[in-house]
Length: 116
Length: 113
Image 1 (tube, one colour):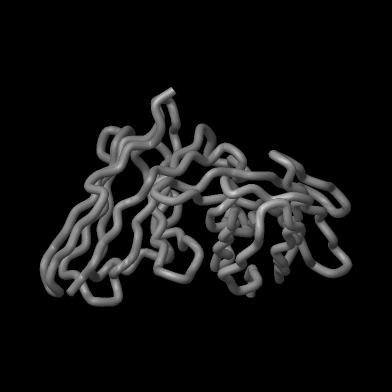
Image 2 (cartoon, helix red, strand yellow):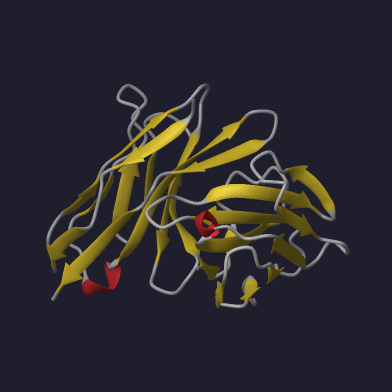
């Protein structure tokens, strides 16, 4: 079974530029998550999709972050404009069920963003 | 609020040493508790879980017991290997109308040969 694919692996941008990350979940996984992992901290949920609908985006900074999952499969997360504090690893995860209790999550390897 | 606190790392041990990584939590309600592991350059993987008080989760020689009275879920392994070098995350999941996952900050483990 192929895992959760993310690209790019690394990205360095200047502040105020824009950047986009891509995630392709495991085939058949209806639920997709984007997490932000700042160095020295645990992952923080940014947004959760069930198919192509948003379930939870309460911690997404909507003035600069946006995400979409138009066809209910792959997803993109965008930051525009980026700030220095956005430097982090952005993790994508997927699971079969919306009410998955955590043991069904599969994480991608993440995209490491550095804003200079 | 709901939170997870882990011991700060890095933890450095020699091979075959005993490992304990402390984890305590604060939660309203009755969470499920998890340990995830992140090897270098990889995503998080579920290591073990416990869904109710006094449950013991175990996997690959690692164990953790859900202690409601002390709100703890400490990770232990009797004899670590170099291949156990990774970052370990304690997490809880609460049902607050939807399932919310809260991760600890992670503890980096280095095992020397």
